[in-house]
Image 1: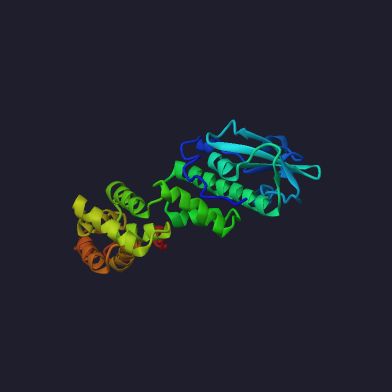
Image 2 (image 1 turned 30 degrees about the vertical axis):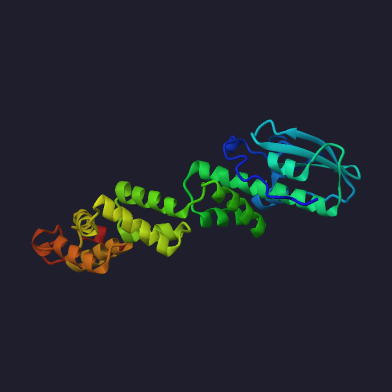
Length: 292
């Protein structure tokens, strides 16, 4: 018995926050609240406890029932040599395997069925992440890897989400670029860097930012000037050299191009010796002398 093309859209419309563990052993407490806090251990130990126990064939399917908490999920209770394990898979996985009470699983069919449960686990975990924030495919992949999930299992899970349109790095980059440029008023360079940090490919990030800059008529030079003027007003206790060093560093860290930074800093510090808040000798007061 082999696993055919299991459904990829099951669980997509389910209660994402209500997903349960993919497999539970009937010999262990099924509720996290039932275990003492000290016994829960570290995050690594908790993740390890969710691994599907290996059963030795022959393995008999004892019960097949809909998961009461997650729509589209089915709980399959299997037993071998007195040990019982419950797998959570999709309804199409049940159809693909023709899973029914009383059937006996050999080594190959058990391995395929338990792997399907791992894929469903990764899929549901990714859905929960997407329900709280927009994320790139790479971001999801790295977060799932930190849960010690197998890379091939992660690839299959994300592939199912991708096939139903829930993963699209181009759309993600456009939405994030628009939000950052429009609301946070970051520089285009800073937004590109932020997108790359969130797992978006460089060319995709560049194209998304360029598209938003063009459609929103965003002017980095104007934003750099505004940021320079605002920051300069906070540096009046410093001599010109210190103020210029701090101001250029501030603008560079916000991703503005160097030519814009130097021009904006020069204009923001014009007449600094006449209008600045430091003394006539150009020295800074002791209570404000420290670097940032």
